[in-house]
Image (tube, rainbow, N blue to C red):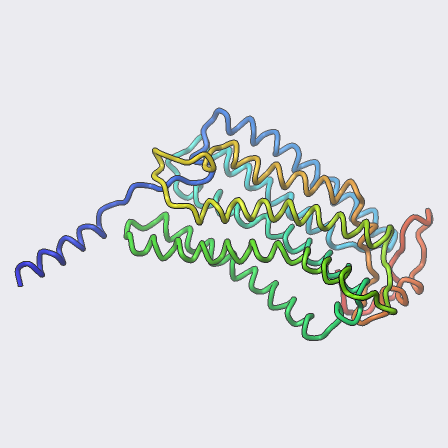
Amino acid sequence: MASALQLRADSQQQHATPSVPPASLGGIPSVLPDIPICAVFLVLYVSFAATNMTIFQRNKRRGHKFVLSVLLFGFSMARITTLVLRIVWATRNQNSSLAIAANIFVNAGILIVYIINVILGQRILRGKQPAVGWNRGLRIAYKILYASIVGALAMVITSLVVSINTTNLHTQAQCRDVQLAAITYLLVFTCLPLVHILVAFLMPRSAQEETFGQGSLKSKAIIVALSSCICMLIAGFKAGTIWSPARPAFNPAWYHSKACFYAFNFLCEILVLTLLVSTRFDRRFFVPNGCNQPGDYTRLAAQSPKPEDGSEQQSSAVEPKTNSY
């Protein structure tokens, strides 16, 4: 009996003993070099935020409403917040609330780009294979996927907050399992646009095939494939660091370095923004509002008035209630 009580006491003591903080991607920021690097990225994201909002407003005045430009603006604003938090955290390393907020925004912001890629891949599939792309079951699956992204984000945030605020080893292990599941799911989600493209171009050519926006479907597919591959690199790197064996903060691995943190997060994201904005995806991937079945891309585009410069299609003056982004 005494032996059993001693073992129980040892177990409780082990769970109550604070564990060594694990190494994290990017580590704890410092004034140098983090603040200068963050300042450079901050200028870039501010520029892209202004550019995307300007493009959206100019398009909107011509009746060319392209909501995905607003999403890129929102993504840029989220990254501005992320970098500001990291700069402040660099000057207040002991503030755990700043650490939690900064890490939450690092994980949350990129989800907007993941969703944009899926929407673009979906449009390519609907244009190339309308019968498949407009399938009712697939449309329901899209809604489930978007809802699950929100759930994955909630899982990451909750597990992150709990793991930082607890010293219980069992709870920390459970939080890590939750993060593994959520990060792996996000990696799979980033692969979906490539699946859309493969299905669209490997299936026999459909007699109902239709185009949309400017440029060929092949050029659109190349843009989405490049953007998706960069996002897969971002998600894959994050998943790889989570799946790797945990290391103590005083002995981090190479992938925990600040160089990897900025390269596989902000630098890759800037490449995606540059790709989408420079190729004018607002013109290439525009579809008229109200599209909900095969043939709508062509039929509704024909009913839409042309802009004054004739460079791009506009949505009709009277738009149906259904919005296809």
